[in-house]
Image 1 (cartoon, rainbow, N blue to C red):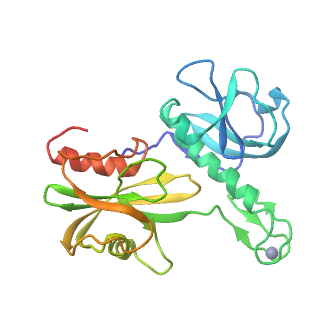
Image 2 (cartoon, rainbow, N blue to C red; image 1 turned 90 degrees about the horizontal axis):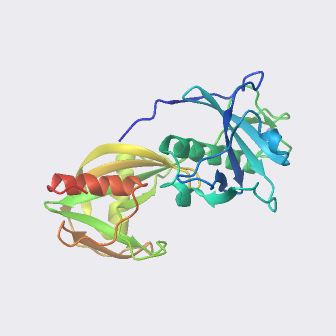
Amino acid sequence: MEENDKFISRVVPPKEKLEEAWWFVFQGNKLLVRIESSPVTIPFLVDFAELRLPVLRQHYLGLLNNRDCYTVELADGINPPAGMAFEGLRQVYDRLDEDLFWVAARAVQIIDWDRTHQFCGRCGIHTQTHPTERAKECPQCGLLHFPRLAPAIIVLVERGQEMLLARARRFPTVMYSTLAGFVEPGETLEEAVVREVKEETGITVKDIRYFGSQPWPFPHSLMIGFTAAYEGGEITLEDEENIDARWFTIDNLPPLPGKISIARKLIDWFLEKQGRSP
Ligand SMILES: [Zn+2]
């Protein structure tokens, strides 16, 4: 997996806004993009206040290639400025610079965290944004509320020249992907891999190896990818999650997930190993 070392995460904004910065502006979970050019881009302004739009919340994110990055949320019902539109992150993935996309994936999670941690979970009073940490602090009991991350494993199971893919009930179209599921409290990642594969397909696996990870901002997952080898069992759909699960070879591939996902990176890795470039 590629690593992004161009972005430096920071919490405390610079004292003054002197140069153009990237503004990751959301309405709900939709990003404000400039659509007059292709590929699309996002507002690059000294201060978003120039646009005179009412802002619900604003956070400083850090630096991308030495340029400041901010994120802002606008209220529902505010129309985008001329030449711009609000679009879902999945819709802009192929049309936005990849570095900007992954900062947007951070930004949407910061906005969502701020929006959903307005009150202390222990005493119910208004939290305050911590001045130097990415945290919301309760002024009464001191409880800190950090951005939530939900770790989930995702695994490609191999059996010789075959890989195990499933069609999840939640997929809107016919598509087969690698198995995935959230890690439970108290569980290791490897235990989660074994449990998920067993629960979803009845298959047992061995030789679990780390593959790579990917933030998945829908809404706040961290996908931790593995490969594993078939150990035993026959496919049985034991829970409600999947409509179908099958072994596929390079010669009978089903519709696959899009390039954005670590699922596809796992599948492409397997296909390359079989001697075909994806
Ligand atoms: Zn409290």
